[in-house]
Image (cartoon, rainbow, N blue to C red; front, side, top):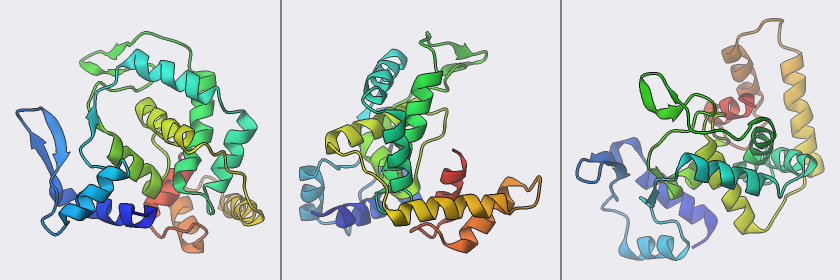
Length: 221
């Protein structure tokens, strides 16, 4: 099953109406729609993309992996991958730059919860929760980068990049796209609101996806 077909089927599965909470397992999961065939599910499994692949990584496990994986990138390589991810490479690669920067500026630290919130680290934003590795991959491929306070999302993205064995470099069109994005931002009126910048970039249709969410993801950097 090719990449486009994997994403098509996963889009059907990860629709909002298929989400549910399994109280016995205490997990947020997704139902498989009846119109997805057994053969399609088998092909997803063979590709390593079965939905509801849940794990509950710990805080120190995630940061050990973040430092180790990010250390395999130079800052220049991560910047190249980010720019390539604007157009010719999948959106997944945009995560390389922010992951590298987070690894450089975040000191090693113990899990330190917010007062009144036992599951979220006040230093890095890590949350104690189960995650679906396939959903994380789907989100990176279709929606761009995780939030800065989501080290788990970055580690799963870095793992996907490492498994690919690639470090993409930008084409001339990727570089043109990056410069065009900067040009739109520079020509915005002073003190423009975030939503105005987002809408202007969206109107220019500089990215291969048409959703505003992809522009939002880009602006978070």
